[in-house]
Length: 137
Image (cartoon, rainbow, N blue to C red; front, side, top):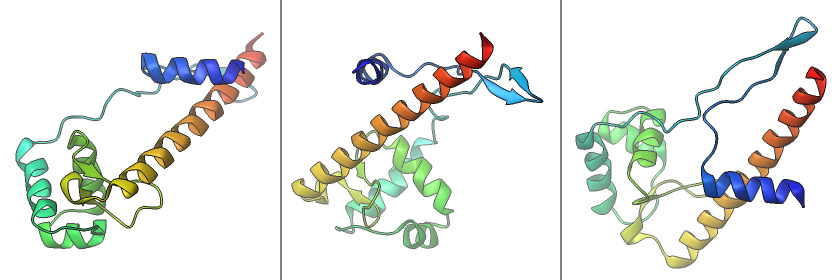
């Protein structure tokens, strides 16, 4: 229950921008992780991806999009992230789809999967942080 409250709190308040507690040579070394939002992508590139997807209904793989637009798979992921929720994609989805062309059931399934995975990742991070802090004491 405590982990649930902590994960809910982290989701509602935003994730902290720093984490610490890495083992090094038998001791603890503080390290910082940058968990801030990714750097903004050039608007023209985001709009290029949005245009591609809005003119082609359905899901498209990152490889297909990348080949057509002359991008890398990683760049496609970055642009989709920067599209402010207009591009639907996630774990188990067949690729990327413009929100306007995505069936409601698919949107619900993908977003539920994303939220579930985020909760699991937050729980894991909190367990790791607790263990690291117990080593410091």
